[in-house]
Amino acid sequence: MPLLELAARFMRPLLAWIEATPVHVLLVCFILFILLGLACFWLTYYRLQLFVLLHLVAPKPRPVIPSEKTYITSSPSGKPTTARQLPCWYDRWLAERRLQEQKHVRPQEAYPAPDAGSIEPAELRLSVVFPAYNEEDRILPTLEEAVEYLDKHIGRSTTAKGPFSPSSRRHQRGHSSAAKSNAEPGGYEILIINDGSKDKTVEVALDFAHKHDLHDILRVVTLVKNRGKGGGVTHGLRHVRGEYVLFADADGASRFSDVSKLIEGCEEVIDGSFRGVAIGSRAHLVGSEAVVKRSALRNFLMRSFHLVLTILTPPATSRIRDTQCGFKLFSRESLPHIVPYMHAEGWIFDIEMLMLAESAPATPVLGSDGGVIGTSPGIKVAEVPIEWHEVGGSKLNVIQDSIKMAVGLAVLRASWMMGVYRRRLT
Image 1 (tube, rainbow, N blue to C red):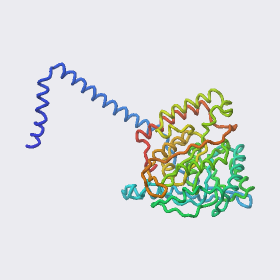
Image 2 (image 1 turned 90 degrees about the vertical axis):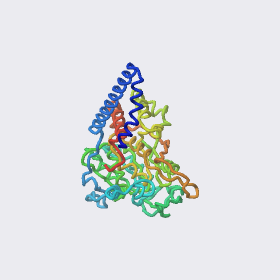
Image 3 (image 1 turned 45 degrees about the vertical axis):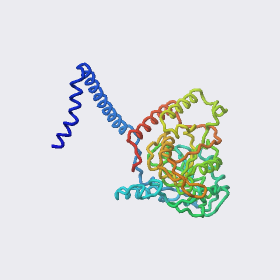
Image 4 (image 1 turned 135 degrees about the horizontal axis):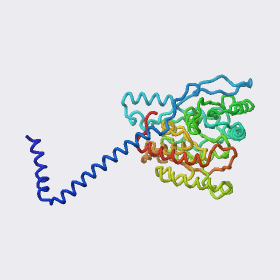
């Protein structure tokens, strides 16, 4: 039989080698073979144990409660409105993605470039997301600074075209899979994500909105159960309507007018699919009075965390000098490649956002004439120096939260490497 002949053909040389080999050499080979087998077995066993352990400890965001998809705002009467439904590009994206998976359509067939990057057009120029937890004493100056700047440089009309207009680079680029209108959206919105505050954060924000006639411009979304800063930001990003989306800390530590620098930085790195990210950076302040006045312990922990970050994160993310600054801006088209895959809801969420941007699907690179000259993997991130100052009342416990962040980063990185987290529906 051909099969037996084939087996014999391979066995004859092996048997001849065994007969010609000294017994002690065969014994050594046998022992090495057993050791190699045991090593493979234990490696597989421990990988399986690690995989199961990561499944148990890796963060898994809780489902959204229906009331968390609503908002309240101020009214001319001075009383808060009843709950209104939030717009949600994420729900539409999720429905399209599920339909795509049910039909077993490959992403590259459903969306030419890049994968699963569908998002409805912007209605406004800029969306600003402020995550807030017990911020009644700090949020008012932040809102005053933000609204003063936004009114001056953007305006409230959804059709107005102010001096804040993005550079022509974004609106003159051609892209066959995304027909961009020449008309730029105007106006802005402010989303305050109240992360289960127990103080008067909501009342302070709505009173400010009433005094400044920000009816339906400033919206307050209340999370029934506290998620953490990352969870609040992610929730807010699911409901934005802006062409650009900024999230900023409610304490006002960053100078709000630096949003114009982030817009310019985002424009510099934006790709052929209009994806780009710009992040505020305080790295240039190292050695300045603002940093030197910090305790030696806090500065030591900051440097130690950055070392861990460099070791555990992929190349592009590890080169970023300040990942934790709460002042980051995204182009609208970058959101579907980041927001749906977020898991971290604590302080470490910034790093997951940056890693997701780095690992996003490739997109065409366009030349000055609009022609495709190649492809570029990932979403480029611009690190932009901004003005920053220390604000009292921080909820960060330096020692405890530094340890949590280091452990959280290790779990996060291992979960992505081991396949516990993947670019799939969550």
